[in-house]
Image (tube, rainbow, N blue to C red; front, top):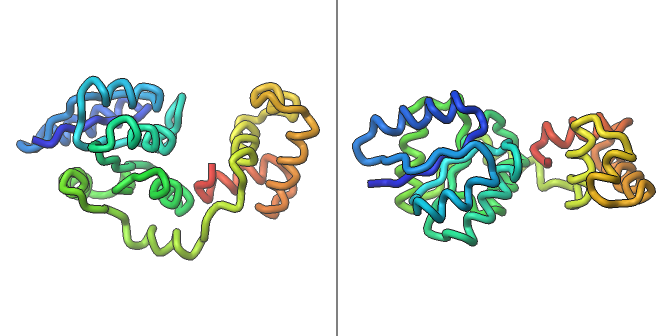
Length: 201
């Protein structure tokens, strides 16, 4: 029996995935969580073989949660299941130790197959997305630039961002300026949007 943990902030999607997987005689859904912060504790409590998780969740994002899960429970294989098949997400997912990357609009049988293949120790990557990721390269942003742009996505001012990240406003301006140059954006909002579209945030 393959024990599966589901992590998705949308209750309807999470419930649908759970219902679909429970139709399989060799798969048991042992935990369902709605935020990245809940992944580690739920995994330690239920000891899943496979964690199927979204990227964008409240608290820790799915890629951060995946990296932490790799340290907490190395035997658990992580498959990212996301609406956004962005090359940057795939690159970050691989760096976090994720073994599979599937998009939510894939046929149900592909998702079930991904769970089984992950449990067997195999990698599951969409070939088209893998090719796109190779051609798009890695993120040019530093960790701090990503943090600043992530705050800018929510419409934060320089002052808001500085307070949220415990930085000086001058430091935030420097990071924003650098990120704008790297993304060839004219504003911080545009830089944040470009970075998000590439899966760099």
